[in-house]
Image (cartoon, rainbow, N blue to C red; front, side, top):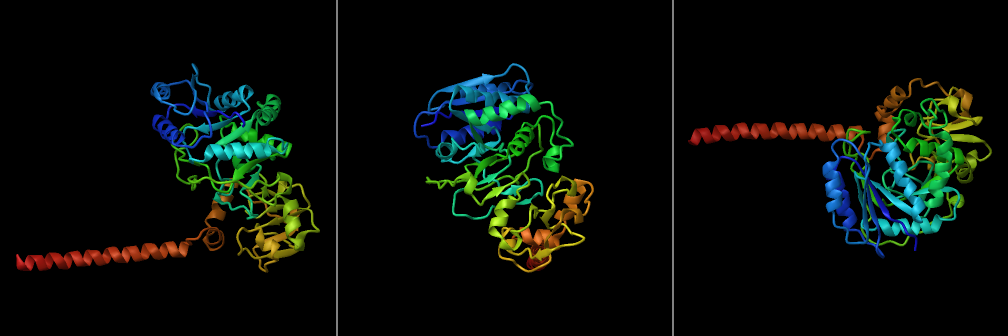
Length: 403
């Protein structure tokens, strides 16, 4: 069996670390597993160091690494990744995560399945169900297997074998000082990530080398996204966890139809193989409508952006949205046309905000509870509160009459 120690990356979030360690303690392990807690140096981490040293790990050896200086998130994760040289690989967990009792069994099975697959850059424990670029739900196509493949690095629970990490490390040695702020090779939201982000460099490496992360359909980790250096806290990344033992079905990555690019868009060759109505065209996929015209290299595009001219068009009713092309669903929301006929959507954040506020089309397609239903619930709640207020007034008058 692969020797994969658990590496926890922490800094100054004491309660977050305690919560993660409690979930690790309750997890199921086939044999003794080493736990390494790596703590970045800096103000406010003394209690974290004490908690890490005082934690009783009943499942094997424990090592606490307390860095003397503040490395910052990017360099700290790089230090953790370098630990792959000492083992077959590692499982890396940042301190605001929480794991399924079955996370270790999944990591071992997945790495065994893909250890010789050169197209794989890492194994995610987290199930990606949200498109960060579009800020909309993401649902991969159902193909009967238990994993799917995305050109996105995972930072919410991941595993690297030594070979997988070394591939990135070799690339990073020549690209660590590259400014990705204006890099058209990565999604526009990624360009805005801070310089402390290691993930955007790993993502760039994945895209350049045409590799994938393997993602589970049922998550083995979830993200509390506690307030920290890089964000203010949110519940949007919470996902359901697997709770019982499972035997996984792993397809070969090259044969999977659940393969997606860094925008969470299905790879064009896959969509062409599934949708005969567009199979004769060389196109790029833009069903979330987040790709800039100038970033698309192909002559044609399948998009939800409004083209000045289109060759074919489809509805957006079936889910996931690729099925509307596979089933040749008639409509006017998705269009196939030449890339040159795409609009210039201007400033990305303003454009994305505009799309997400299109309740009639975007919101009502991607969400089960539509704006109409939400307003209806609020209205009923308002009427109910008014009714209670009236009852209270009547009750007070009756009580006053008999007192």
